[in-house]
Amino acid sequence: MRVLSRLLSAVSLTLPLLGVPLLTAGPAQAMDNHLALTPPMGWNSWNTFGCNATEQIVKDTADFMASSGMRDAGYQYLTIDDCWMERSRDSEGRLVPDAAKYPHGLAELAAYVHGKGLKFGVYESPTYHTCQGFPGSLGYEQKDADTFASWGVDFLKYDNCTASDPSQRPGDEKLPLETRDSTMRDALERTGRPIVFSLSLQPAAQGESPWEWGKSVANMWRIDGDRDASFDGLRRLIHTDLDKAKWAGPGGWNDIDMLGTGNYAFASGSNDPNKRLTYDQEKSELSVAAVLAAPLISGADLRTPAAAGGSGFPISDQDLSVYLNKDVIAVNQDSRGEQGTAVTTENGLNVLRRPLANGDVAVALFNETSSQAVISTTAAAAGLPASSAGYNLNDLWAHTSHVSTDGTISATVPAGGTVLYRVSPRPPATGPAHELVSMSSGRCPDAGNNQTFPGARIEMWSCNVGANQS
Image (cartoon, rainbow, N blue to C red; front, top):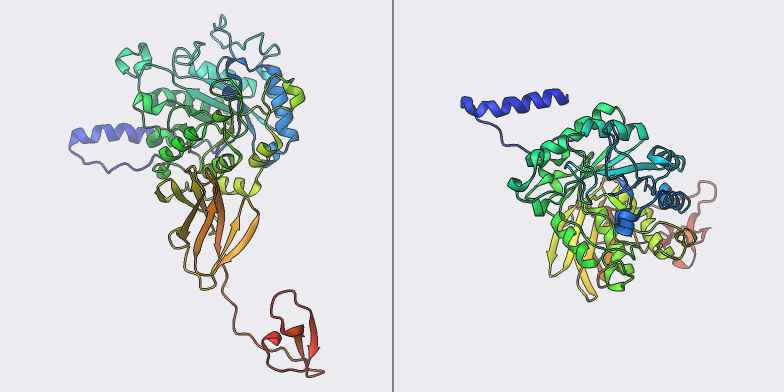
C-alpha cells in the first residue's frame, strides 16, 4: 500500500506538466504502522532531568509508574531524551550509550522497563547532531533504526535542531523536514518492530506546518515550540491547537508538548512556585488535553521521595490524583479519535467540546482568567441532539451528576480552572403511567405518605388512582 501511495505521488507531480488538473489535497492519510490509535501516554526525562537522566533514574521512574497506578491507567511509554549517547559512534557507525550514565546499556534497560509492563523510548534527530551536540541520525537512519529495534525500543522521539534559514543548513539538512522524517519512518518500518514515531520539531521557528503532512509520516507531531510548566505556556499551546482538529485522528495526533502537572523543577531549575501549575490549573491541563485528544506525556519527577534522595522534586499525592483520573483519561482515549474544537473562546472564558464514541459529548468549561467566573453554553451549541427528557451532566472532577432539563450547561469555574462534563441525552419515558392492580387482592402498590420519588417504601393499599400508585 505504501509503495502504491508513493507511486501515485510521483504520478501527481507529472500530471500538471501534461495539463491534467489535480484534485485539492485533504488531510494526509494516516501512516500504516497500526500504532497510537489513541493518543500515546507516558513520561519523558527532559523537563526534569535534561542531560542528567541516568539508568537508575529511569529504573526508579519505571518502578513508580508500575506501583503508583500510572501504568494501569494507561501511561506506558517511558522515554529518555537527548544526551543518552556517547559523543562519537563506534567503528561500525553505531550509536553507543553513555557508559557513565547507562553502564549496562540500553538493551538491558529496555528489558527492565518491559519487565515492569511498560514500553521504552529513546531520542534522536534528522540532523547531523542532536540539539545538545551528540550524533544525529541523518545519513544513518537504517543503522540507527536497526540498533533501536535490536535494543527493544518501542518509541522514538525525533527532534530537529537546525538553522531556521535553509540556506544556512549544512549538506542534507537542507532537505525538507518531511523528506528527512520520512526516511526514518521507512527505516523503522523495515525493522519489523512496532515503534511509535514522535516528531519533536520546532514548527514556528522553522516555517514548518507538520500537522498538514504529519499523519502520513508519524504518530504524533509537535505543533509549536517548547513550553515550560507555567500556565502561560499551557494557554499558548491550547490556543495554537484549537484550529488543527481536522489533522488529528487514530494513528496521528497533534502534540502540545509535555504535561507540566507535578513538575517542580523545570524552566529555571528552581522550585519557584510561579513556574508551576496550581491544582486547579493542573486539572485544566489534563481536561483540555483530553478534549484536544493530545498525547499525555508527563515531564515530572516520577520517583518516590526515597528514590529521589532529597535532591529531586517528586510529585505529590495530589498531583498524582490528577494524572490518575480515569474518567478524564477515558475522554482522552476515546476510540472515536476525534479531536475537540472550540464552541466559544471569548474573554478567556472558553467552551470546548469533543464528540465521543458512544454519542456523549465532553464539554470543558475552561477559565483562563485570574478571577472566578460563570461559564455557560447549551447542549445544542455543544452538538448534542434535542432531548425532551433533558441531559445528564457528569462532572468528571467532582464525580457528581445532575440533570439539565432545558439543555443549559453551566458552572462557576475557579480562576485557571476547568469544569469537565460528560454530557448525554436522557432516554425518553417509555410510555404513560398506569396503576398496577393485584389480581388476587384487587389492591395496588402504594408509596407511603403520597411519596413519588425513587426509593420510597412500597406497600399494598386500596386503589385510588393517586400519583403515588402510578
